[in-house]
Image 1 (tube, rainbow, N blue to C red):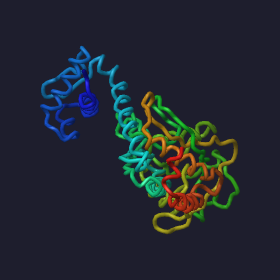
Image 2 (cartoon, rainbow, N blue to C red):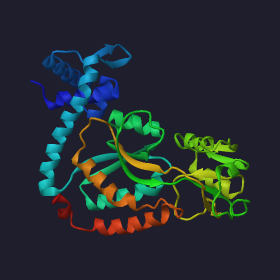
Image 3 (cartoon, helix red, strand yellow):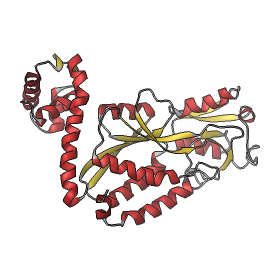
Image 4 (tube, helix red, strand yellow):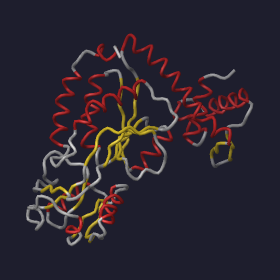
Length: 330
């Protein structure tokens, strides 16, 4: 007979790549992890790992095939425990969410604060990074859900559209195009470009120009969102961005001017992503519902996301003060 501790040891060893890493994460001895994995292999009648001395573990074909089922078994057990807890105490436990780096400062703080106010028994943690980093975190189980742009995805994920944003051009007030009501990509190609060199935003920027049949004149490239805006505010070039902070000023306090792009510019969808085939926990379902309620209020038009983000935070604070029992009536 197999048991959940054996399944947990298998999943943790697979994610950590070694018995030692699994033991550290589970806070047990390495021998306890090895015995648990060995017991599961005996119960299933198959080898789950190839042991490489000094080089960790490698999943066998059977191990790869059974890993998702093992994760779902643990998720089912956790869901049962969480459902029982929720009957008397509300949602409990820890939830790790992911968020794309440039968007994290704009939406994550308000989401975390208001969600924890509504569900005080849940502890939120987060990871941030590029699309590829979030994909790896989701597939490896390091986060359960992630807010990201629906562009440049490398793997198949379960995706839910939350809202859309339209790319825009950003200038210093003294830039010759700053006073325009709109600007074409062909016009922008004749001016110095400050590129945000973060995947997939950079590829998306270049794709917009390529679709218009022009090539931008890149003067600077940086992976820092705020450095891009500060360089633009110093009139060292223009940039194209998707997310928009509250207040059109740079990190130095210099003014910035937003100008819409002319023509049919395809919106970029902001999605809530999760690993395919993995059953969400009650905590993840509650966080998804929270995102559905709040994030679509962020406007996709020329005023950008920031004013609504403030409204969302204020409204969500009121929501967070509502009795937790109301949420349990779902």
